[in-house]
Length: 76
Image (cartoon, rainbow, N blue to C red; front, side):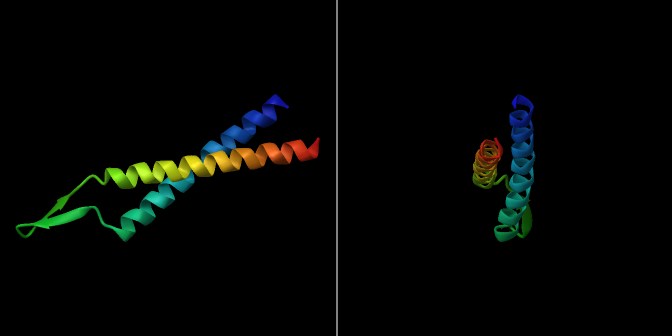
């Protein structure tokens, strides 16, 4: 039973990583991280985008972990 919980946690973290990267790329596509100043392109670090992507990934991981535990409970 313990190894199934650990496996569920690993799956949740993997899905969290995938969704964080995909959502981050989607947000960058919506709002490119650069500004034009005096005719030059200056890149900025979109901290809000990073935080929002990580938050989204963590929420997805928690939901995935809960669903995995619920499925394990139904099997027993």
